Amino acid sequence: MIKVIELKNIKRYYRPAKEVVVRALRGIDLDMESGEFVSIMGPSGSGKSTLMNIIGCLDRPDEGTYFLDGIETSTSSQDAFAFIRNKKIGFVFQAFNLLARTTALENVELPLFYNRTDSKKSGKASRKMAEQVLNEVGLGDRMDHVPSQLSGGQQQRVAIARAMVNDPAFILADEPTGNLDTEMSMEIMTLFQELNNRGKTIIMVTHEPDLAVYSKRIVTLRDGELVSDMPVTNRRYAANDLANWKKEHELLSGISTSSMEERVPPRGERISPLGEMQ
Ligand code: ADP
Ligand code: MG
Image 1: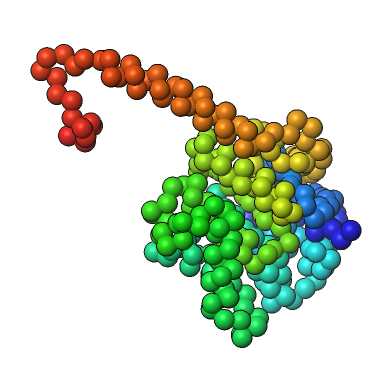
Image 2: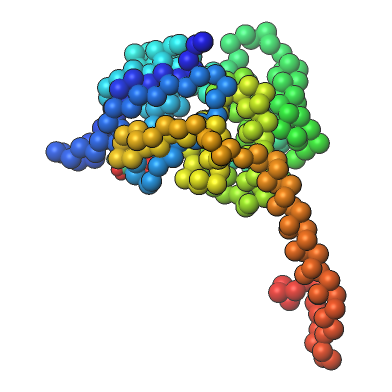
């Protein structure tokens, strides 16, 4: 089976000033196969972002080799490097990074325009592909909405659709739920698990153990070294956790609603429908 990612003895040193060397990655060996769902963990400063940048072809190592889908990236030309990045990797960021005045559909279509090698491929075909992935992430009825008309969780789903539209070798997600509340985070993890079940390879950087248990394998970095690489034995299913969370939440909000109804305002107290606003 062809490996999606093959990192051999990857070293990356920063030289922020003369005679100062930060050894951000000190010789990383890491392989990933198609269909995996991997979490990359580690304390702040351990080298996660540096490794992400190399895996994402945004940066190159000082030493070592990186084969992506069988292609050696470290010796490729700038153009080839950029082409591999656009063609092979679907990025998902913490801050969504959608274009603000652009509909969900157009946001998802965008990578297809950058990547169009076959000029005969019509706009209609691109539109169809964008519609299809938006349906896959459950936003078939929100295609004409601009980001401000969508919840944070929906915006991140648009970003995931955009990441998938080129059918990349893997999705690379950097703290994908960092800007989301518990419910939306579980929705995104449910979606990742569904996509992974359908064969998508997912690599996710997170510092939350609660999220890593939704993946299948946890790789931990410390001081630029890979210190642990383990399968997830206590794997959880986000759809179940989400359903339970909703049940508990409804129960709680049910209690608070009824107790609010029971509360009779004392004479003279005005209850404003706008609350704090007035
Ligand atoms: P993490 O994402 O796990 O917090 P990073 O990969 O950002 O870790 O950083 C790894 C190490 O490299 C840290 O010591 C950090 O201070 C250093 N580092 C990161 N980027 C740079 C840079 N551009 N110049 C100098 N040092 C850097
Ligand atoms: Mg970081």
